[in-house]
Image 1 (cartoon, helix red, strand yellow):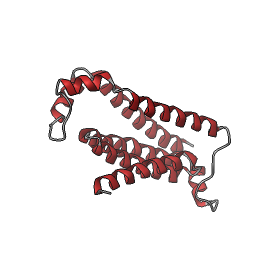
Image 2 (cartoon, rainbow, N blue to C red):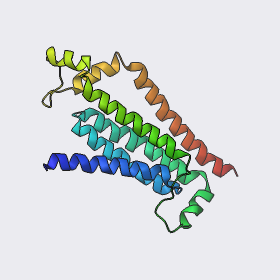
Image 3 (cartoon, rainbow, N blue to C red):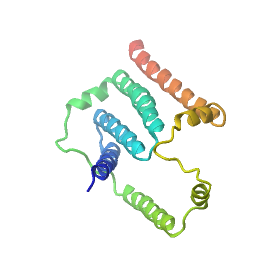
Image 4 (cartoon, helix red, strand yellow):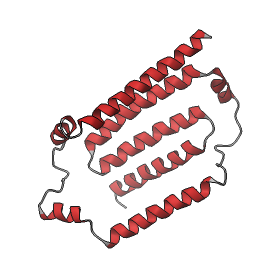
Length: 182
């Protein structure tokens, strides 16, 4: 097993394991920390997909922006939530209700079906990219191309993300002010 393959599986296991714990934990502070781990592991997986710009953006926007705002909103919002941190249940996580299991199995089935269908037929857009020699290589500098796309073709989603960050900041400040008014 090569080092690259080992790191890929380590990042994948870390992302999937932490994500499962995020949705099953009842303690919000621990779930936020594990969400932090999921976002970093996803950035590592983006590096393996040769999406270095997306990995850096993942860390800067989501870890550096959204997650920090979520932490501030959590810390400043409700004192009862902070008191729940001191009460430990003795177990690492509690399983969700039985109703979630069929939904999770259905999503798993859809993923397996997608993987099998992908292996049966090679997508036409990939065959065209290989034929035209427009496949992104690891030596290509794609940051310039992404900058042009962000400011021309994808300017609307780029601005929607900035509005989302602004709404998160306003929500965090509103939650912190609500505590002062009581």
